[in-house]
Image (cartoon, rainbow, N blue to C red; front, side):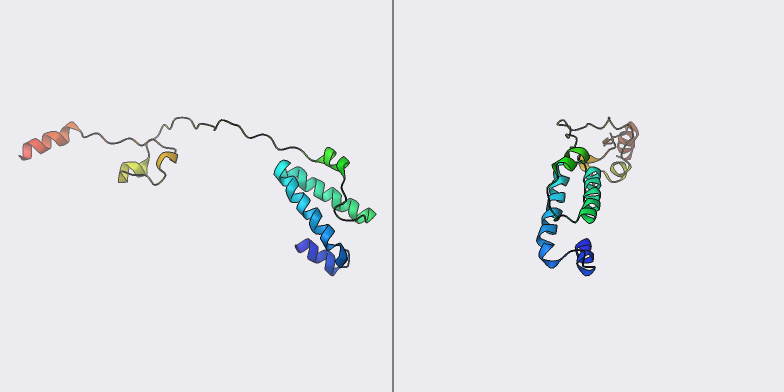
Amino acid sequence: MRLLNHLLSTNLLQRQEVEYYLAYTTRIFKFADIYEWSSVLGYDYHYRELQAEHNFKWGTFSPHMELQLLVPKRPKPSVPVQNPAPKEDCRIFKAKGACPFGDKCRYKHVKALPSNNSRQDATKNQ
């Protein structure tokens, strides 16, 4: 919107061309869904340079530029990546007996076992 405002205030874009500019901007964000963001930004940069040089209508389709500049997104792994087994005990769990991160905590939640000394102390007090 800031670029649109700049183009309008400097008369580089006529009011009747706003619809074409918005269509172009919409296409850029559709590209972002299927192409790597860095390549979309490169495409946008080159498109704007060419538009300023040749003064064609915004939103003019350029399949050659798409093929040359846009890189498809890499597929996401279908299997979630497992974190290695935690080696350290969770300090929060040790201190409070509960952890706010629950199953997502990256540390081990080991319940303290009653020690033999506490049992002996309990029998001595009776």
